[in-house]
Image (cartoon, rainbow, N blue to C red; front, side):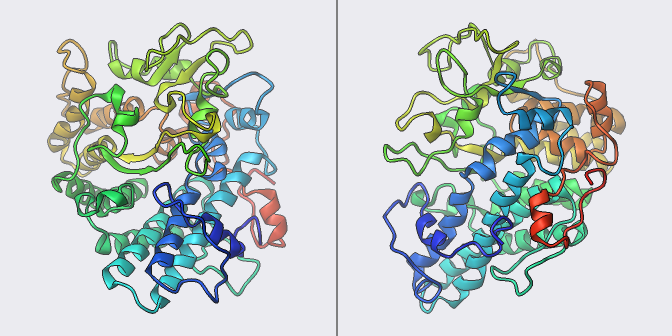
Length: 486
């Protein structure tokens, strides 16, 4: 089942078993001669990480189904370019749209690779037992992450936890069962993964105990289990492993990658021969002069007005025509083919070897500021409003960049007002980092917000994306379409 990736050819494992730190060429393998030693177990785990740089996982459609679909961004680029993303932006997409099919394929490929590692690493004849447990924990963390995005996009899902299931046509499991699996995977990962400081330098970027706790806190926030979200977020905060990077603007440059604020990010590198980069940066880059990319994911007018007066994060997030590039190398020129062009500065990278499609910018998945705001929201929902204030104010303090005249500390005592303030803070702090859509849906206000900005949003339908029609056909109709897309 190629598109569902349940029976993804084992040969792909051999060609993908490298991450950006381990690029030795590999021979062809089969299940009969693979998983024989610790090196092959590590390579199998690296293959899961490799999938995270893939076009179908964290690039074009991913950006469309997180930022562009929300009120934070418009499609961008030229009017006739990437029309399937315009359909996402306008909520006119159908079950044949490219975007849902792309991420479905990409994420289930990652799940296949994780399932294979989880099943076969325990069978490796001789290897260090701590390494064995850690690699399985990494695979479970990554599987939990893949399923977390899928369940938020599509709801009920085919829940596959083995690489080669006996049934070809697998129906959708209730999203409650999917969340149970996600929670189980992340709890297993927490039990065996090292802390961030517990890894050797060569393993920088691998899943950590803090990343698993942080992601699980976000899962519990999504399902409104406020006590567990509070507990896990505070465990991350009190671990001493993380903190806010001093400069918000520089956090999104090379120097901020894997820094103190990073819980988890997709690792990339621009090698001359390719193989370590991603097109995440290119599709959002300046379109025209200087030619750095395709110009998609245009910051919306509504996002511009969401910032408080003088908030430095707005300038750090949005790259305007006439503005000097962050490295001082050039000025963004007007592109007459784009209406009101501006760009996601957080995705900007300087010129690099291998061309624009070999982007070296790490993709930030989870950072400490997000954890602080999860803690604030959960505490507030748990009736601890006063205890929530220091965490949101810590985020605001870093954002104000030493200026006492902007972003004053919040002193709200009304839980309803503080809830709104936290939601706004999440929007501006995490803008164009692919969180906004998921926040709107879990807050049960996607319809109101989308309709207020003039989008053709149908409540009860557009909170979920359509199951790709090709997957329904392949399943011989074992997969049932989401409401409104038939």
